[in-house]
Length: 104
Image 1: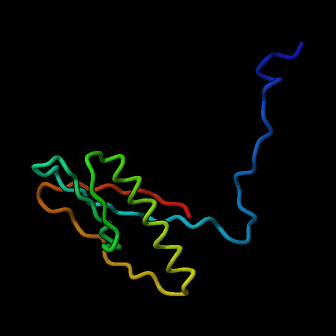
Image 2: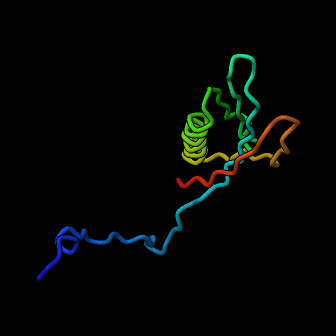
């Protein structure tokens, strides 16, 4: 007798790349401020400071930062330009940091 779980089993998808080109993964180092008087948190990517976001939820801010980070990297790659990386900054007093791995 075949169980219900076995009947519903989906085919497995391959996880490995084709071997020619690994999936690029980038460290996105985000520095977040403490909430201001209006409850807004401000964030920046310390290694690519052109990318910033503000909001009331850290989760929403990080989602926005990751989306903008991917767009910027793709834009630089398609234009054939080097990514203007900067050294990772240290958080100032009252700031926190998050490291987010980003796959393109």
